Image (cartoon, rainbow, N blue to C red; front, side):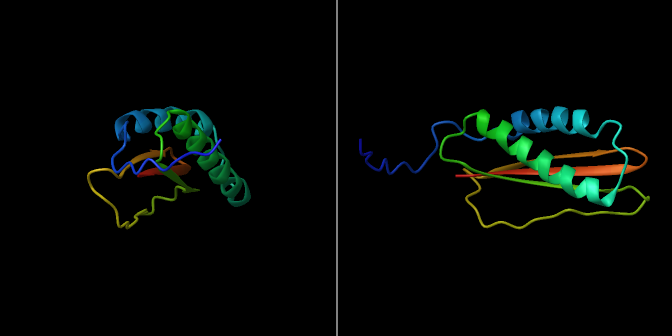
Length: 116
């Protein structure tokens, strides 16, 4: 079976950042609850959490969207942390969702980009 190109320029279903953010919030809160900071464990946990969030977003079925997930976990020492990004994209089709969680010891920032 050989598939022909669709030449589709717009998505059938648009990426919904509110829906993704709600899903990310529940996943981050459940994973980070009771987490004790350790640099080695935080590095591993950020990879695992990023992979889980990306898989969950893919399960929401946004066809032809490239999903990129970034998770940052750090020790909360009352410092100021800014996580930022720059992208060249189509503002009508591409978007992002973010969620920030923190307690007295740890912070976690999760970003998901949906790029058509």
